[in-house]
Length: 145
Image (cartoon, rainbow, N blue to C red; front, side, top):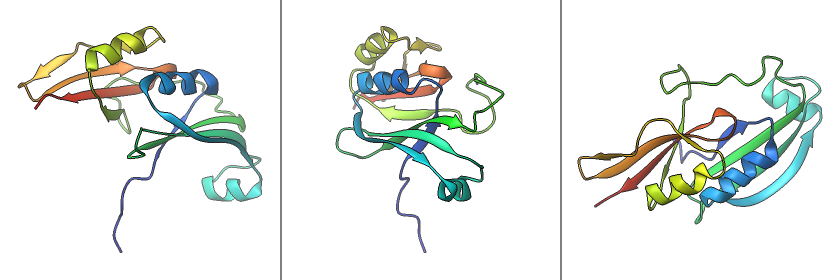
């Protein structure tokens, strides 16, 4: 047995349409959108009375996919818990991009917030952390050579 690849990353959100629009602005493509509910999904994810809506998105070429999920039932009663770069657990998603400055400027118009600065790392990468919708942290990395 061996692992073939990471299939997708799931991101739970409150405002599904805003999250979709943000990732469309980044250049991801919608693969599909659907409601998911029923006992079968609850058995998989360990929750009861599940009703959610998902949007599958991918990078151009399909190398990476994300699944945006809006839970209608059950809802997370704690609400949005913003994380920092050093919060334990999964903290961010990194995308290899072209023109990091141009993409950051574009995403800032859609509410993205640069967390620090765009840094030239040893003339190999330009990298930065950007907070997207609902506190999602994205690392954007532009290979220079």
